[in-house]
Image (cartoon, rainbow, N blue to C red; front, side, top):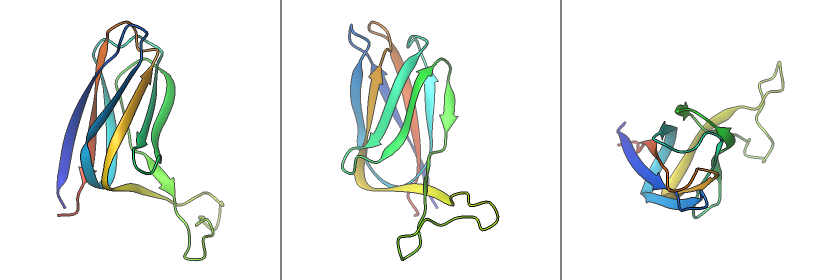
Length: 125
C-alpha cells in the first residue's frame, strides 16, 4: 500500500467562484482535507471525478478547515444494494479513481481568496 498526497491550491475570482483540477489520479480516495486560507465563511464545495462525474464531496456553508472521508454505497453482483442485515443501513466503501482528475468547484468563496485541498489516495502499490 502506498499513500500519496496531492495538494491542490484554489484561488477564486472576483465573484467568489473557482474551478480547478487535480493531476490524474489512480487508486482509492482515502480522504479529502480542506485547509482554510482566507476563503470567506460560508464557502460551497462541489468536488467530483472529472471523467465519471461521481460526487466525492458536496457541502455548502463551510466555515473551517475539515477532513472528509468520502464513501459510496456498495451492491451485490445482482445490482442490489448491500445492507447491514440488522439495520438495513448501506454498506459503504472507498471510491476508486482510474486515471481520472478531481474537479473542485467553489462558490461563495469571497473576492480573490484562497484555500487548499489535500487529496490522499491509496494507489495499492
